[in-house]
Amino acid sequence: MHITEKKYYTNYHKLIGYKIPDLLQRYNFNAPMPDIGYTTRTFAVYSANIEGNPLDLNSYMNFKLVEQKFKPQKEVAEIDNLVQAYQYAQSHDLNEPAFLKCHTLFSKTLLIKSKRGRYRDEKVGIFSAKGLVYLAIEPEYVAGKMRELYNGIEQLLNSKLDAAEVFYHAALLHLLFVHIHPFMDGNGRGARLLEKWFIAQLLGKHLWNLSSEQYYKDHRDEYYENIHLGVNYYELDYDLCLPFLSMLPNCLA
Image 1 (cartoon, rainbow, N blue to C red):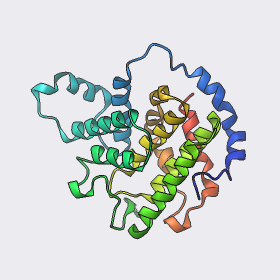
Image 2: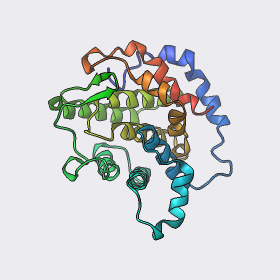
Image 3: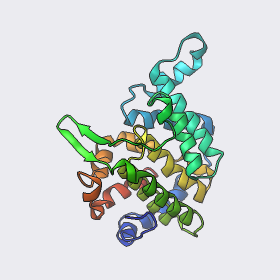
Image 4: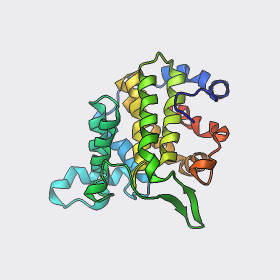
């Protein structure tokens, strides 16, 4: 599956894509709301929560009010690092070096220094209480798959896409990225950042205020269920991808 492919776009458009222009119009980005710094912290909390960080938004924000009096917990530092990555992305064009810089920033509490901002050179799988759920592609193929992905991103960023097409390819980018699983850790956080970065670059910086992370967090079980399209990279069935692709537009509602 390639990010530029539109094999599922017709069915996607019939299912939900046709609603996106109206949903965007009704999603009032111009209404009074906190500044981008506050919303960035909010979405970083939600993205970290999806991966198991137990710190809720209220606790994190209250710590930030008094942080000079206390040494930050690991959970706080994890969110702070993710905020830094979002802030970096918001001021840079989307490309491979910029995204690797973001991974370096947000993986400080997740990985040793030599693994940050670098594609993995080990095998990696996703496990549950019942055992192995998904086995990602072998490490020797990761860099090539990521080059292919970024070539597709560049092609799309230089294309004239309408809003429905942008959302379709953004969600597909999210899905392809997590299936490659290019890092030892931070893949979910990276995929959600990458998805929003892609949308904001094509539709405008106000789309950084899109509450996709919150929607995924509120529907966490569904999110993981819809990502799961096969037991390993070579048995992925993208004919089952529409439930996942449809989640992103739902955050507008």
